[in-house]
Amino acid sequence: MDHGGHGMPGMHTDLPPFTLGRGLAFGGDPFFLAGCVLLLVLYGWGVLRLLSRGDRWPVGRTVSFALGVLTVGVTMCTRLNDYGMVMFSVHMVQHMILSMLSPLLLLLGAPVTLALRALPTAGPGRTGPRELLVKLLHSRYLRAVTHPAFTIPLFIASLYGLYFTPLFDTLMGSRAGHIAMMVHFLLVGLVFFWPIMGVDPGPHRPGYVMRMLELFAGMPFHAFFGIALMMASGPMVTAFEHPAASLGVDPLGDQTTAGGIAWAFSEIPSVIVLVALLFQWYTSEQRQARRKDRAADRDGDAELVAYNAYLASLEARGRG
Image 1 (cartoon, rainbow, N blue to C red):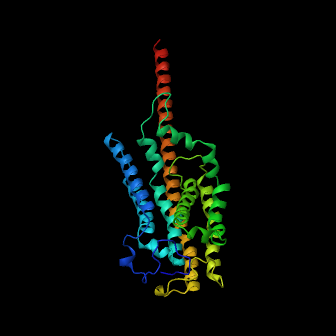
Image 2 (image 1 turned 180 degrees about the vertical axis):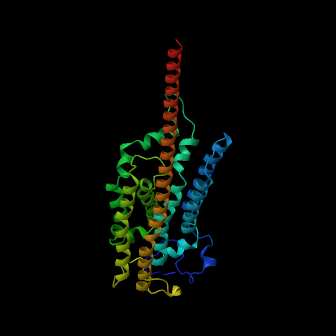
Image 3 (image 1 turned 45 degrees about the vertical axis):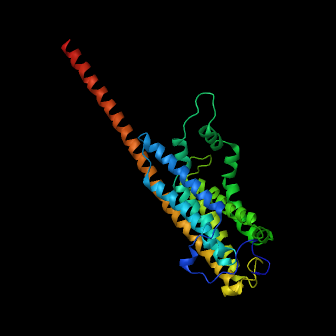
C-alpha cells in the first residue's frame, strides 16, 4: 500500500479505523516481545530465589514491575504499534507511555535491589554478575549519567532534538531506527526517574526536596513541547504528513491531538512521583523516629542502671 513513501518497509500501513478490539491484537515487534518475556522471567527468578530461602519480597513491588512490563508489551507488541507508524497521535501515546509511565512502574518494582539480594556472591577474589552490578553502581559512568546536569538536558533533548529535526523522519524510515527510538524513550525515562524515585540504590541520591525540584525542572519543557505541536500551523514531521486514506485522518488535526497528549501526559508522572516521594519521606521519618525512641530507651535504661548502682553503693557505704 502506498503511504506517501513514509511507511516502514514491510509494515502494513493501510489500516482500518482504530477500534479497541482489533487494536489489542498482536501486531507488534518481536524484539520488544522477547524483551518483555525476558524481563518477567528474570524478575520472577529473583523473587522465587528469595522466597525459596525464606526471605520476603513485597508483593506490591512485583505487581508494579509486572504492570510496567505489561505497559511496554501493550505499547509495542499489539496493533497499537502498527497505528503508531501511521498516526502521530498514536505514536505520541507510545512515546509518553514508554518514557513516562513504564519507567515509573518498573522502578517502583526495585529490580536492582532484587538483583542484589537474589544474585549469589562469586566468592573471594572472583567476579560474578552481582559483583559486576555493584561495580557498575559505584562507577563514575553511572554517577555521570544519573546526575541532573545530564538527565534533565537529555530528557528535554529527547523531545526537541528529535521531533524538531530531520532525525525523527530518518529513524521512522527503517524498522531498526524505529526500535532504536522506542528503546531510547524507555531508557531516557529510566535514567531520568531513577535518581528521583530513589527506590533502588544508586550513585546519585539527593534529598526529597531536591528530587521534587529535579522532577519539576523537566516537566515544564514537556508541556511547552505539547503546546508547540498544538499551535503549529503546519506538519512538524513528514513521516505522518500523508496518512492512508482509509484512516480518514487529517494530518494537522492529528498533530494537534498528539500535542494535547504530550501536554496532558506531563501531569501523570508528576502525580505518581509526588505520591511516591511523600510516602517515602513519611516512612523515612517514621523509621528515624523509631530509631531515636530506641536510642532514648537504651540511654534511659543505662541511666537508670547507673543510678541504681549509685544508690546501692551509698547504701553499702552506710552499712560500712
